[in-house]
Amino acid sequence: MCKDCGCSVVEHSHSHEHHHGDSHKHLHDNPQLNDPKTISIITKILDKNDHEAGHNREHFNAHGVLCINLMSSPGSGKTALLESLSDLGEFKFCVVEGDLETSRDADRLKAKGIQAHQIQTGSACHLDAFMVHKALHHMDLDNMDVCFVENVGNLVCPASYDVGSHLNIVLVSIPEGEDKIAKYPVMFRQADLILFTKTDLLPYFEYDIEKEKEAARKLKPSVDILEVSTKEVDSIKKVSQWIKFKIGMR
Image (cartoon, rainbow, N blue to C red; front, side):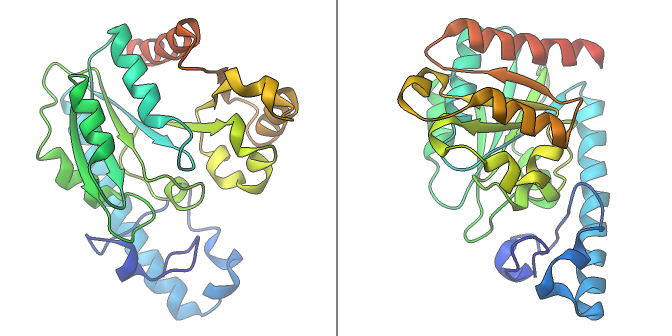
């Protein structure tokens, strides 16, 4: 059983292993998981995934690659952001792509000349470290600066499962409406950078972006925040510059 949404572990994973990113402290918060035996089993599974995530990070470190986990709800613009970043050509990157079905997003990236490997999770609502590890066998990390993990579109589970990334970027789009940050705090507490996407649509929605930024900083005062529209090249450049800075810090 997944500690976040309550679905079964078997349903959730192709690797039969799982992970959360921040600790086991939230296990007891879920009323579906009050059975000590259930908590014990899940904790053991998550610990195994922690170990695998560490192995993935060692692999990235050995190749001098920064791994960034992209997380958001479906349709917030993760793939479009990657396409736009490729147009700038400011650093070399590849992508591990996660979706329940189809290879459409990976195909979009490949059409832009981006090395991408698709993971189809079936009914799993997130990627885990074991899935990413298998994908890395299909990736050539030589001469890469960054490996993005485009996680399954979901504002719940991906935040709790470490895939071996160094940084987390969380996208929230204007059409999703206000209060997503307040409703899904675990996701946004994990963010190193929050991107407010599709900001060109602000005139058409009742959306107080400054209020949402304030909500984000209440959850994590140190988080970086940028406004993004794929129709505004300068906004994409700011994201690229943030990533380039992080590459330089390694």
